Amino acid sequence: MLLSASGIHHRFGSLVVLNKVDFSVSSGEAVGIVGPNGAGKTTLLNVLAGALRPLAGEVRFRDAAITGLDAAERCRLGIGRSHQIPRPFLGMTVFENLITAAMHGGRFLAEEGHQRCIDSLQLTGMMQVANRRADTLGLLDRKRLELARALATDPALLLLDEIGGGLTDGEAAELVGIILEIRRRGITIVWIEHIVHILVQVVGRLICMDAGQVIADGDPKTVLGDKEVIDAYLGGVAA
Amino acid sequence: MSMNNTVAVQRWTRLSIASISLVVLFQLVLAFAPLFLSANAVDRLTTLFIYGILALMWNALAGYGGLVSIGHQAFFGLGAYGAIRLADAGMSVYPALFVAAALVAALSLPISVVMLRLRESEFAVGMWVLAALAHLLVNLDPLIQGETGTSLIALNAYAPDVRRAYTYWTALFAMVGLAWWVFWLLRGRLGTAAQSIRDNEEAAASVGVRVLSAKRTLFVLSALGCAVAGALWVATTISFQPKTYFSVQWSAFMLFMVLVGGIGTFEGPIIGAVLFFAVETAFGATGVWYMIGLGGTALVFALLIPKGIWGTIESRFGIRLLPVGYFLKSDRST
Ligand SMILES: Nc1ncnc2c1ncn2[C@@H]1O[C@H](COP(=O)(O)OP(=O)(O)OP(=O)(O)O)[C@@H](O)[C@H]1O
Ligand SMILES: [Mg+2]
View 1 (cartoon, each protein chain N blue to C red):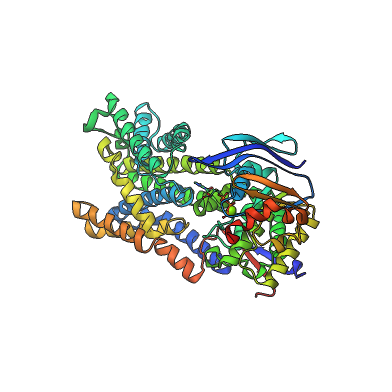
View 2 (cartoon, each protein chain N blue to C red):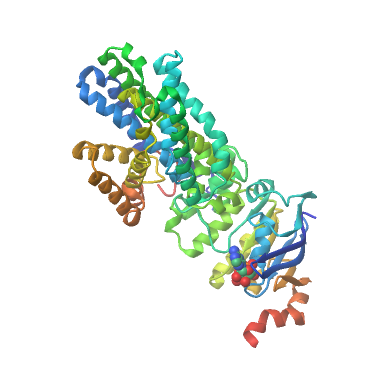
């Protein structure tokens, strides 16, 4: 098991957002997470990445407990992440955003780090905007920057949160290609995404969350056909 | 997309090499200033250098660490006090200025442990309380004689002209040294850490930046610089009255210089210091209206021109005179 979380429990005020969630992913796997708005997907990702300390539960990475480690230390161990609402370093250029990630999260020394960043820019198709200040980027580029920056930290595990929203069919196909390439390089992927048809082109396993719980976990086709999943996921629309 | 070999990382441009050379040249000219400038001009320049140090330090802390302090007069006052104490104990005056600053910097490390636990506005207030506390404690020292104060009498051993020149050179050395040091730090690991924290603390942590340790470094650096400034101030004015040194006006000055010049840029605070110096020279440094004018201008900038003068120029024209960044150069784009 590359990463596992057990008994994760969290509340915001009186709202239980994660209700004793167990989650694990093994090395080389690509896992998708779906679920209706407010299901607790992002909160779970924050717990895995160390941005949020849960009220109860344990997180392990490569068989060591990392529950007490903060986000920076987890990143240095090899857990990279993107943010659902992009958080670029606005006063720095795209390339400098990546350099920061490579220098600190990736612990690369100068030259090696530069190469890693160039590589990550090429993979995500951001070479053309490399020297633009991040505050001049539109939303789609900011999302791509999230991905490119996370890659620059040289992660073993990549946690992605809704990087596919608002794409045209062509752009979506391109994104699928990028993620498949990342996977091919041996990086384990956990990907939260509402756009299921993009997700299933990449992941071998699908998890569905609802109201702070995992309600289905397994082969994507089986999960998407699950009655509970259909009710939870489409409930809001159908009802 | 296999243009791998045609891509290179550039950290210097022609413009920045030219401007650095100019800066170095200018610093050399400044070094000889006491030989050809009037006594009054030399004194005024010494004051300008001290303002420059203060602006640089406040910007390092607030502009890069996101830590807005209204209590750095604590370190300013302690630096001056330390110099007086050390000189009283028999240490040679000019070395004492730096030793005092180093001691204050050492003291700021345990202080940072407490202060950096505080969040934003709590931090600002916490620092203000610290300044008040430092003021009270210094007043307890009989050598200081309460608010009557004392003076750096050891300086009387020097003839006025010699003293003026020595103090000038010391201030120039301190400002230039600190500025290059900050520049060097910003070009290295601390630079990317600090800029990312400035822009988004949570995102910085998510890419592996050790936020707390970077902030601690900036805090100690700013304490050191403000203490040097305080020690230099007592060397120029000779008299030490706790009330003046631990006054919140120093924070107001720093705020003004940094906000007007351009917070979070390397060049901005220097421009802010020169501007502040010019304003002070023009209007005289006294009176309620002067303070209100300064505060008002800083407020206008904070609200309407948040990037300050240099930040606005930099983002509009994309120039960086003293480059701390990384430019990706490919043969295709040039
Ligand atoms: N910091 C917070 N404080 C209070 N409530 C929060 C906070 N963050 C999230 N919540 C609430 O917790 C619940 C779960 O939020 P979360 O962001 O994990 O959902 P999600 O599954 O990612 O939803 P979406 O698909 O809309 O992104 C929501 O009801 C949300 O409003
Ligand atoms: Mg979410």
